[in-house]
Length: 255
Image (cartoon, rainbow, N blue to C red; front, side, top):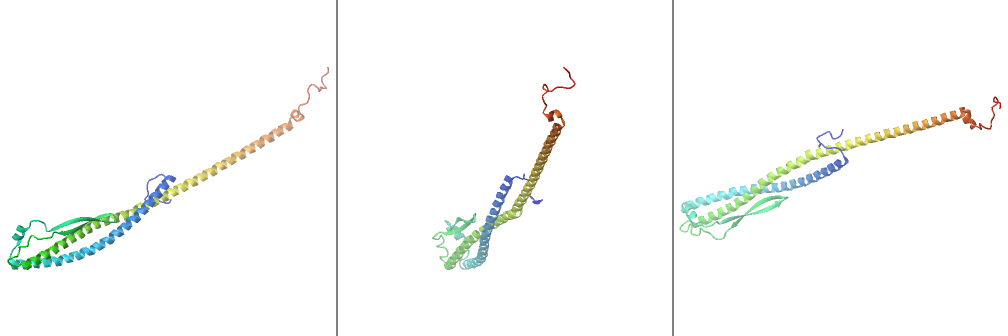
């Protein structure tokens, strides 16, 4: 019998066959859409992966320069950490978050908003002012690079999880749902064909019985007609039409 693989436990009817075919078509459409979504997310994932690699390399170079700049400041002016802490009144950098939609997946993106002005104008006024300004710019670049890397890394992790979930769904539809529905359709079709053959055989049996009954009835009618004809021929009264009993005389009777 067809459809002997994994299938749904369903009663084989025409309506069930129609509904299963509609479900199969919906599953195939969903599989196609999810596959396209997976391809789009994979393309964006690879692009972000390349940008993450570049940002990490850039971050390493910038942090190296920042460390050298801090060493120069320390050598020229000594420890200025307490001056920076005293003069820090407000944030020089603000991070703004926005959202980006990629095939239905919302990815966060971070941007650095640098506040104009500085709270460290007097730092290094006595000595090492040039080294302080250079260190300030290098660390500002490091902050911008770090925020960019955080944005890319967050999008990378979200896309990685979404792609895995999408792959699981695509594989489940392709290897579980669609074969199960196809086996169910084959099972229902086979059962309906078997029912049609049984109904055709039953109708042939009914027609044959009706034909035999009709032939038997016709044979019985002809037999009864033949017997009636024989009786009619054998009985003289019936054969002679009965005659006139008052008009005829019996020879043996004398009046």
